Picture (cartoon, rainbow, N blue to C red):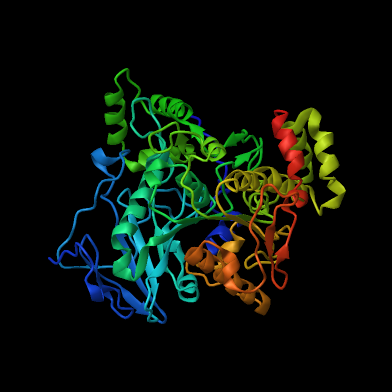
Length: 541
């Protein structure tokens, strides 16, 4: 049985990539009473019932709050339904289970389908005004991750914001498509909208402003945020959008992350997703001329049977009720949820993928580099090597990482910003720390690898970063930028180095480089050879 390609799949669990990712890697409150947002209060009334959280220094934390019913049994592969209210005071001091996934970011993975929980972190400092809300969508390639792996205490306190992190269904539980299955390929996105609706109903209870919600995410979370910009169902549920290392134009070349990986796009037509589901149902012995019988068979399969193949469905579908058209089409016509956007990527995204290219712990070898260049580009190899001369890089792995960074990450991020900037304010950045936390020791120079910007905002999987003095100042400035954007729609109001808007009509649209001791303009299009990749793609390369 063949599973579909996974564009962000890390190597096997023992790999250096995974180590880096893991290290990085009774009373019903229908409405919150006036005193519920008191900064020292650990019992809060939500619309589902009372929850008791914890006080920890300058933050209050409430974890494991259900925002939708468990999507199990007949609710597997259905849009989320309302969570059942509870009596008494619900313990909210520990996170809920992570959504089903294989081993990776979570040691041992997870087998839970009862996973639609969220976590709320607020400052304890008093305030006379409701705080902006930042709803964070985790990354992980749509096949791994959990909201509780992101401790937002620094972001909440310095940013004076209410931060909500969530789980959403992953892999085939979140993005399976089968002919006859309503909402094929969009269940994880529907979960996110249910969480956004929960925030609208409950923000006030935690001191947040439901009329000032920023939807933010990194990698798959950024792609999700981008998709929500194009989803009619998300209209009115958020007021700003932050996309870190991911966009609706994310696409990849053959062999990008592993040898033999086919070129593909992050978002697919629903017909493609359903055809893949038809093939899977056949392999699992569930195919039938009766769509209801197919679904009954699939819903009866235990998680353990589905986990080996669940990573085959990690590309959300459009042409659906939730996502009627490809977001690129919606952005080109202006038919999307028009809110201010902050978007960007890291300077060396793909080093995190290439560092484990040879089976998990070794970077791409020189021999593999040569073979992959020919396999990927064929007669165009010389043209690519003219732009990326092998001699200018420390290794073939570094050369391939530069190619993959530009073609996969920088190009898509920039094209999405160009389209959006015709209709809404856009601020673009590049995170450029040459030696961020957990980048060494490694068998190749990592630079500003994929996920390295996250340390500026979060403790990841219980690990706090070790910063130099300049890195700490950069982290504080980035939190100030993000918080100003969440509060006002413009990071330029944070103070510090100016950050002009991205103007797609300018000869050189402004992009802010974020590096320790060096914040200022960068010509991303020139640095990442984006004109070359636009021509390459238009020529069918």
